[in-house]
Structure formats: structure tokens, C-alpha cells
Length: 121
Image 1 (spheres, rainbow, N blue to C red):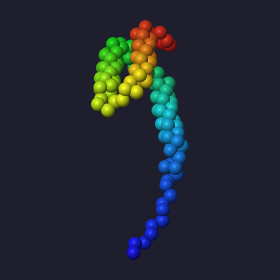
Image 2 (image 1 turned 135 degrees about the vertical axis):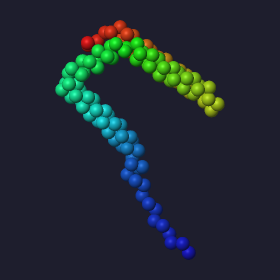
Image 3 (image 1 turned 30 degrees about the vertical axis):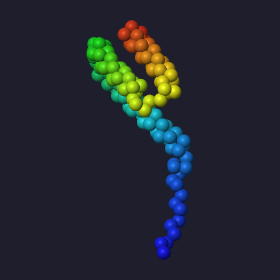
Image 4 (image 1 turned 90 degrees about the vertical axis):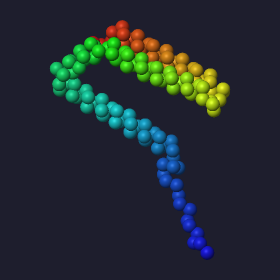
């Protein structure tokens, strides 16, 4: 006869998945904030290097545009692959198209702002 095992209680985060997700998101945002503060501190301490970097970014803006266009192309390719996937249901097509339309509008507005040179300089 086999001994009866006690039922193990699920871990705290398995019982509270929303709390786990919230802590992960909060931790990630705090890590990004800390990284941004370290970068800002270094930029303030080394203002000559920060100015040189800013000048280089301005000179290479069309190279960065090509990089972003390549990323947009890759995202478009992935989007089309999702739409043409064999198991993709037609009920998800309209919400996905809305998400894609808003994303395209946002990307176009961001690119226009970057290319127009408006903002703090």
C-alpha cells in the first residue's frame, strides 16, 4: 500500500497571478527608470561627450531612419504572417486591423516629428 501524499499548497504567486504580473511590471519600470537616471547623470557629468553624441545623432539621422524603416518592415512582415496563419480566426481580424491602424498612425506621427526637427534642441 502506497503512503498517501499530502496535497501541496500552491505557491503564493500561483494563487495570485495578478500580483505577480504587477510586481514584474513594476520591477521592470523601476529598472528602466534607474537606467535612465544613470544615463542622465553621466550626461550631466560629461557634457562634452553628451554634446558630441547629440551632434553625431543629428548627423546620422537618415541612417537611423533606414534602421527604423527596416524594423517597420519586419513588423509588417510578422503582421502579415499572423493574418495568413492557418489557425487565425476571422473574429480576431477586425480588432487586429484596428490595432495595426493605430500603430501605423502613431509611427507616422513620430517619424514626422523626428524629421521635422521640432522639439527641444
